[in-house]
Image (cartoon, rainbow, N blue to C red; front, top):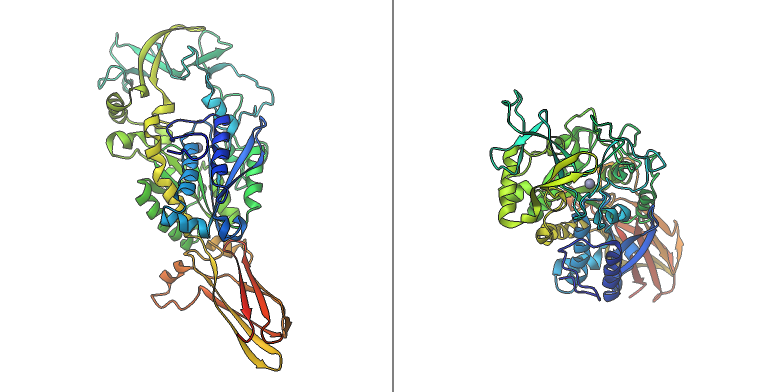
Length: 561
Ligand SMILES: [Zn+2]
């Protein structure tokens, strides 16, 4: 239970904005030595965008350590993602001092967690009368909340859910399934015999400007997809991409908050659904990426699969059905293409896997489940979570007259798990975030010395090493495109002769490089910085070693000790 602070939360329900805000601040107040909360911007509707910063302050401030960034809920209805982010916060603050791995991570690493990128859209989703939107609630592309003719999703009968409307129609594409009379199955390609009841299926909603014959399905007036608004391959042909890159205040603020933290070495964006760990690229084949980067991603992903049960996929290779119609402007692509970081889009929850033990096809985004899969899920819900499916019941629709409502409640079936499964679903992902953080490069000083050269002159040596797995530049992409500044070492406390006080030491490999050196790998993780200084015996000189990603450390060398 998350009973840190004043408010108790067991990761077994979705928090409205005020409760979420309170839980975050209560948790920070209960762990002042580990956690702070700040606002990094405001949403379209004016809500504060919260960022939690978590590290052991006694071993250095957050900006002196390599960091891992996790954000969640850029998409409104994917509320499991926000639960996972809050669970990560809880895992870190309660694991410090009790869990050796978490303790080590917080001593040497920083975590930045944004549990709700899009608080407005989540608030609309969780309202008593919910309105499900893709992401932002800003009207777009029309600036007024123009409602096009056709069906607009709405909870018509006031039960707090948006179910499916079943409308009798002899030309409908759906019929009762032979597997279960509650289930709908597609009418066969060659049609049905006369007298077989057929239906149209539509989301529960009202029809604007109904002409009595057609029911168009327009996009909602709030048609943005903020995960297409990042400045990576941004384009107007991508659905919901916005007016220009960073046109949305939530994304502009997020990108600025990340760029202001150049110590970030890894990235997770939390979404639903699918039960997969997706990685870039969304727009090009793995053969167009540096092979070492694909290798490193898959190395990290292997452990991700072991910890979470989720499989690893390139969005382009495995999830893009039409390779000519790719999805650009997404957060993880921006993080790789502009920052050179290994980012992941975690899609929580695969109900087919929960019910059958077999994963859905990676094309389920396009073609949905099979009839057999849906039937298996229904039987599983009957036995375990009957709230997932509602049998058809009569409803008098304001425009259509008598129809039926029923079917899946997506909020606790296909899009998000039933509440009773939330905590189990997100648990392993906190461990994966910690694992990625510990893979980051980390600068340490392993050697210091001062040798007397005669008169008042000394040679000072500082041996610097990257003790992390990844190189200090993190990816080959980042190194090739010069995204990362070199290590800088600056000596103070004595007069430096024959050279500058500040030295640039380049980048250092991490342990990952050893895999490519045929087991005879030398010391590509080390460098030795030397200065000639003039000072009296017994003087102390200080060396400050800083790298934007791998952290900063200080060393003191006593001359003649
Ligand atoms: Zn999503």
